[in-house]
Image (cartoon, rainbow, N blue to C red; front, side, top):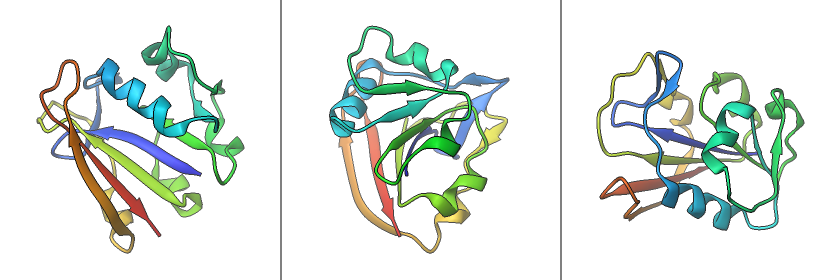
Length: 135
């Protein structure tokens, strides 16, 4: 599986069980990257992609169902148990620091290769950074 996650500059994911930020250009970019493959997420994340077309599958246990070539958009779940099964982790950074009480464990990617870094302008963010990690 390929994991997609959004983080602030201190690897924050959530604050008080809510996403830190969102950006519609980022959602469109994710759907373009996924193409015809499956993009798994839970109901909480589905709200971000309202009105967008794509091969989106909704399931609260989606991380257990994803195939090797499937993408998983994770916002409000502990990612650590699933990193060993992932072949790729795609991180989108907001390039800001938000309050956070749930963080992504970056140390789990210490043995991974950072394959690419790119930046683009979002709708509500002047700069969003994409980092791609592979085993």
